[in-house]
Image (cartoon, rainbow, N blue to C red):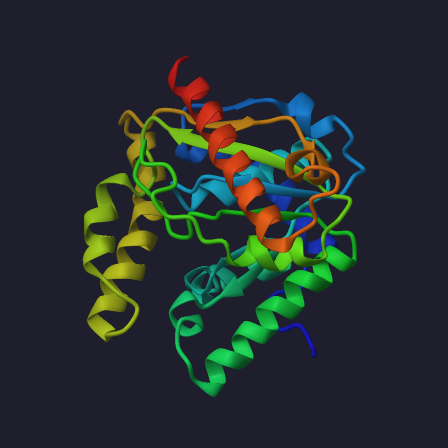
Length: 275
């Protein structure tokens, strides 16, 4: 089966990174982007990894992507919502599929139609191929963006279960994100009134999201308090040490990694909040 969910382009990614640094991408949206734990990124960086993170903003994967490139760390592939595969981004030379994302239609995948079944198979194939090829993954198991302080009310095991079915000698790396003021914060009530089913719902959902990222640099330029963004990276831990060296049941693997990630991401998040 041919992968049509996204195709990482290292040359395109490097050019995009150089452009992001020229325009000071993170400074356009925040006072500071504060990263803790980069020493953990550099520790045993040649081993295959799955990063697991909480999800608060569309800036989460963007800031992770920026920091990975700054530190010279191999870019993980990112399963992302289909709402980020947008022509208006590609027209601004921001093709996320070429930057490491592969897209999942979460509305479609819940259905029981031939199209949904084909999409599920493609997601499984793509994820397993990345693992087989020795690539890293960055997964946001909460699915959609959550409110600050409300970590893991939901935990989508889908990608985790698919990846762990084949992964053996892999490290799990917990990552926490936090913000003084999310880019989307004031627009989230409008986003949540929208949906991806009706035309009006799509206008509210996608329009409010897009508008928040247009307004934010303007707000910062005129002196509004945009606050800082934070990324706290935990220590890589081998899968075998999380599950128990001889515990290779798939369900027990998933439960052990889920428990580990919730506890560790929560701890890393609280470290940020306790600053």
